[in-house]
Length: 95
Image (cartoon, rainbow, N blue to C red):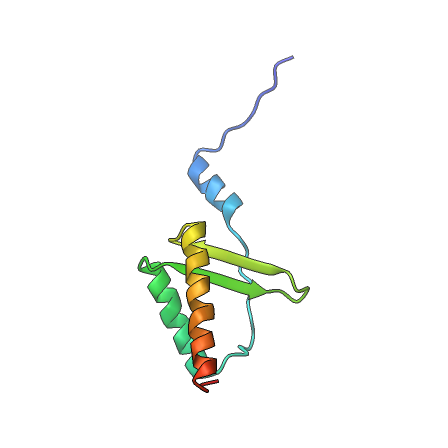
């Protein structure tokens, strides 16, 4: 028995809709205005092609992360630089 399948005219639009991830909206930001501005500048840097590692801890303590414009090895290197710089600041008393 032969089945008939209807194919959409714009398959690209269908695929884009399937891949869209719903964005969680936040009514009130927990960030201070200067932190919002800093976050906006970081997002702009990533969009312009800078390498980045983004890590977010969900309410259930699960980590969500993204490497942008970087390989896994480059991401680990960046995390190492963060740990090193933080250690220096703590040693210098710049908590």
